[in-house]
Image: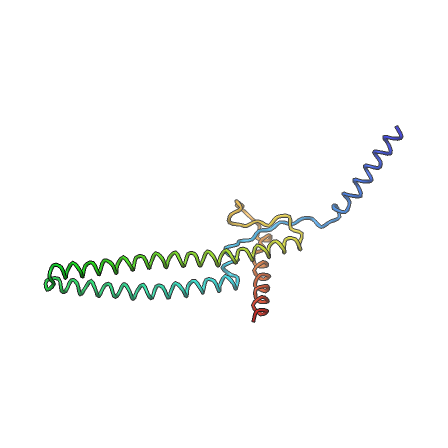
Length: 182
């Protein structure tokens, strides 16, 4: 009987010693981040948006110039319709159709390039923000930090939104990184 008592007492003391420190620890927090909003309001996100917009504007200008040239070519073809022989008219129509197909390919390629550029920039920023979120969560005793839009959360108290805090930290780290490379 004494032997069981000592084993029980030893086990109880062991449990108290191992559980007590965790009971005294700060309670675990939870929070959420709106990653899309973080991308949109971060300085890196703004730079990425500006870069994609600048490339889009350049490509749009080229497309508009080529569309105008095609419109002039079509107008000239229509104007000369009666003056051209059948082989000349056929050749002019083929040249117009080839230029039209070339423009369509250019537009499709431009769209793919812009989408790939946007995806690449977004993935880089999301990865960097993810690193900041992990570090912030570890340093501030978070058990869970959810992504608001993709987590299935239907309601979240604004007090648990850490998006602005994460963006501020991310922008500070990004500025430090740019200053060190200059």
